Amino acid sequence: MTTQSRSLRLADQLSSNPYCWPGGYPLYAITHDGAALCKHCCKSERSSIGTTTGRDGWGVVALEANWEDPDLFCDHCGNRIESAYAEDAK
Image (cartoon, rainbow, N blue to C red; front, side):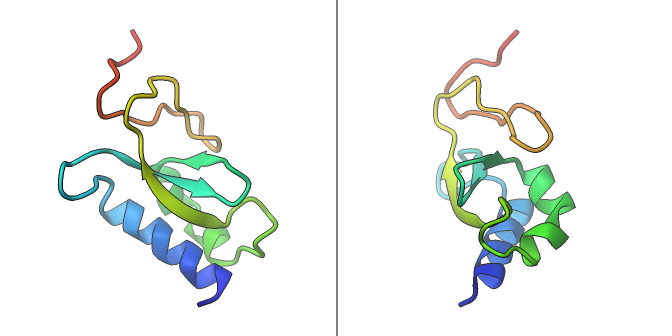
């Protein structure tokens, strides 16, 4: 599987299913350089993710649940990524 197809598959998975099953915990994407991407950016930046070189910051390598980090923000748009157990910042 190529870097592009794996990245795009993971991004599409997050866009269409932003919560893991079972449990319904909120997911986010992790890029090869350690950045966090929200479900919205995975959808809006689909073209960049689908054509990633693997060295450009758009290579999605994993999806992870945000368990308790109330200060996790998308590194692209800056929006807060929902957490499963942490209270929302007021």
